[in-house]
Length: 606
Image 1: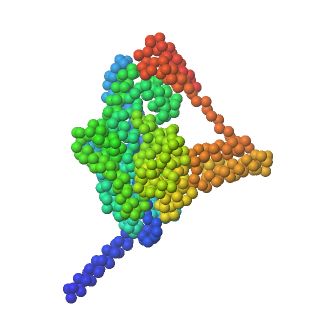
Image 2: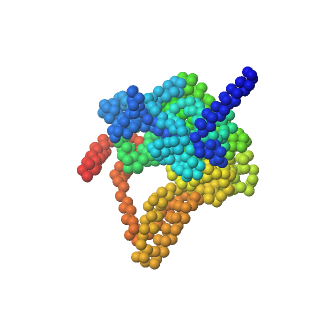
């Protein structure tokens, strides 16, 4: 009798467990469909992190909007109060009278919400906006945030929003804790969807998290169906490596006054800053910049373990030795990630060997931002160097080619077919040296930060996630291995509708023919996914020209750019190099101030 009762209890318990399990599944398919759920692991700054006050309420700006912690919080009024007096004293004495200390205080205040302690834990009063459920359960606001970052609406339509998840995290948080959360998130998605495997989409910094995920939790490989990388930082970014080793371009004042700022902002604004910066002697300016950089690197960046995840492995030994000698707990964690980074390609190969389908989408031929001196040591997408995103592809630097006599190296064990041509049409990239040449798609001239606006990239990612139609770079002509930069939103939303609205009966035969051909060309482009870099600009220009000619669009009126500060800065550099005004002959300084104050007066007079 006891055995019978025991059997009944066991059966009841098993039934109740099954019931609980079934009730936890939130997908319409109950896990019984051919499309695995997709988890987006976004890049740096693609998760909302809000600043809180001491009561836990959101800090609001002057417009009543929540204040984002990324990349920092700058209070202009506070900055002026802290810097004004030491700046004036430094200007009067032409020596650093507290200016470096004041600016370091500004840096620490601005990054206070992102500071980490000696264990690499964030100490700021913040809230990460997390989505612990599928997009189907997100509010309209949350959906807008997600789709603005990665417009996968087409995937959601094909697979269902209950099959799309977005893993939000603090970009300036603790690397190990974030990866642990990611592993647990994957398990949650499996449970909620009823699927035993998921697809993950590591984007940019998400690629560094994937490195750590496969190293710290190798068992997760059994949970994966596909990994679709998009511009992943698999070996960090040279920019961050230069930051941690303080190999910064603006330390060279010759470069600071003639090239550095122009690459980061409007030229006239950059040249104005160059002129104003000359109020300090060259030596004082260099000292102030280095002191502020030391503060930013040593007191802020050195404690952020997630940022260390973007330090290339070639830079890490030098950087960690210089910065982490007195930070043993942080170094213990960053050493762990360094090992994950060193093993990155081996771990990706293990995924492939286990039958996980791995694809990679990368951009190239856009120089890195001119922040570090290594900005053009490798081809790049503006933010991450190509050898990092592409799993080791060989390339010429931006603006050059591999050479007319170059032969592809074919060093990858993942492409043994020597008939495959993995050299880009522009002879810039040899994809055959990358780990997965048959599964890596390249987009020429596409900038990192505009990747999500390239509809061909989004369409490719959608097809890879929602279907098994594409097995390699040869599967379809719609998505060739080497593709181009594009963002056809203006064509779709403006040019094409305007062209269709034209009354062609009132046009000459030649104009009507040109409008029809230009419109057809534009529509064909919009409806395609294969293009070459620069094609879109030619198509837009042709359609715009005929629209202007027939009176359907106003011609663009290009404002004459102001060149006063540009010409002045160039003259100062050619005449005095990097010297400050106090180091120039006195008469020239008098003439200069008369000129500049007159110019500023006329500007404000307008």
